[in-house]
Amino acid sequence: MIGIFDSGVGGLTVVKALQKQLPTLSFIYFGDTARTPYGTKGKETIIRYAIENTQFLIDHGAKVVLIACHTVSAVAMQSLKDKFNIPIFGVVEPAIHEALRISAHKKIGVIGTKATITSNIYTKSLTELDKSVKMFERSAGLLVPLVEERFWNRPETRRIVKYYLRPLKLQHVDTLILACTHYPFLSKVIQGIIGTRVKLVNPSESLIASFQEFLNHNDDIHQSLDDNSIQKFYVSDDPETFQKTALWWLGKKVDVLLN
Amino acid sequence: MIGIFDSGVGGLTVVKALQKQLPTLSFIYFGDTARTPYGTKGKETIIRYAIENTQFLIDHGAKVVLIACHTVSAVAMQSLKDKFNIPIFGVVEPAIHEALRISAHKKIGVIGTKATITSNIYTKSLTELDKSVKMFERSAGLLVPLVEERFWNRPETRRIVKYYLRPLKLQHVDTLILACTHYPFLSKVIQGIIGTRVKLVNPSESLIASFQEFLNHNDDIHQSLDDNSIQKFYVSDDPETFQKTALWWLGKKVDVLLN
Image 1 (cartoon, each protein chain N blue to C red):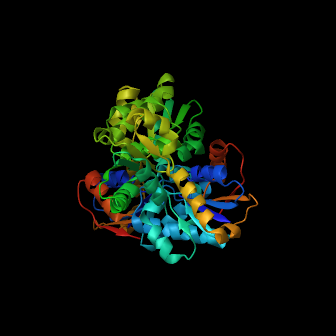
Image 2 (image 1 turned 90 degrees about the horizontal axis):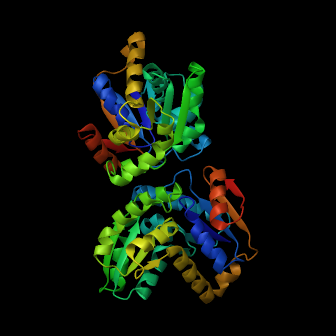
Image 3 (image 1 turned 180 degrees about the vertical axis):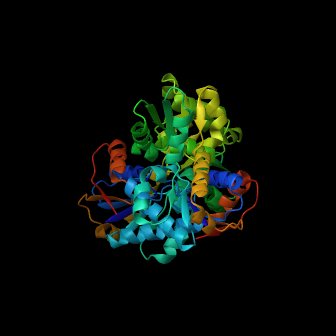
């Protein structure tokens, strides 16, 4: 069983990528909808929530854990690796490698939540790997509520995206990491504003691609994962709303249990 | 000691009104910043949080509790009154009486969070008091993040406010209840769009006015409250950010402790 968690519904983008690439693997998903969002909260609190969520997944049979949440991947990854003795994958590292691979001029932009950008993880990690990289990070706090309010392609959304992207555009980034699971919903708007020459990185897809590669090299772990296509969804609040979002993101009805 | 709680920083508008009207009374404030916001969450979860917060305030010496949060006042008031044996005041009832008092044609609009509007509390309570009242409610989910991102008077904000207020304007409401503690920050924008003939109700001020009247009629309780101007602030996450917001909302530096 694969364990996946997110602060809420955003991690469904990881589920979607997983189902596309590795459709037979069973998973359990936990969305912490009672405490969402994480991106505006402090580091200690995020680490505490991340440990609780990981424990929940392990208690329910997870043998590996995928962290679908950028905020957690950015600030709590090391704490989770220190505490738990199973393979744990976050969204930050795969996105970094993908960005390095596709960026022509090594001018890389990142947009994310306040907590993700404040952590400075993308700049730190990328410049550690390649000193020639120029990084431009920007916190974009309104994009999650805009997606959740379904303001996907309204003029207000375009203006707000323009406002957030302006400094990155001025710096002529050639690659832009969408460092929050919600942002791919705005990728058309974002691509339109940043320009079609700029390559967008969707970290949910990068995560699953890198996880698939890991499984190819770790057959024992691959074998230990259940491949009966079992899917379990748990949330900490309001299963009905989560179910509606899942129906619409994944294109099918799923059972959602309250934990 | 007065106890005040809110899902986060919004309740500082109640603190501000309290300090203006009853400056010598001591209070303890709890902002549940680790689980904010409440307005997007389910009823059972909100009730659970409200009970925990009220218990915390009582454990710290509160003799009366003011609920600064509209969402809690809308969905958890009865549960709190059933559970606790001290006077508890919410923001909904005072706002309703104020709206009835000032509305000339009894066409009253309400904007609030998803949870507040879904509860339908304003329409239920107002039409119970006066059957001739016509109510128009509208959920305005983006206004809290816009205030928190300090997008107070930007063109994007004006467009979004316009979008939310359009149906209320078409119905010619004469009074508009700002049913979320954050909204008074946008009152200039809101007034500009809804029109200067429409009267705005700021429930934080209504709450304190009605609490003051209660104290005038309940001298024993008034006497039991500490009047040494002691102020204590607790939050469940990130005291630094709360302190910054408090400095800016209240105009002075306050000590903030993590609970």
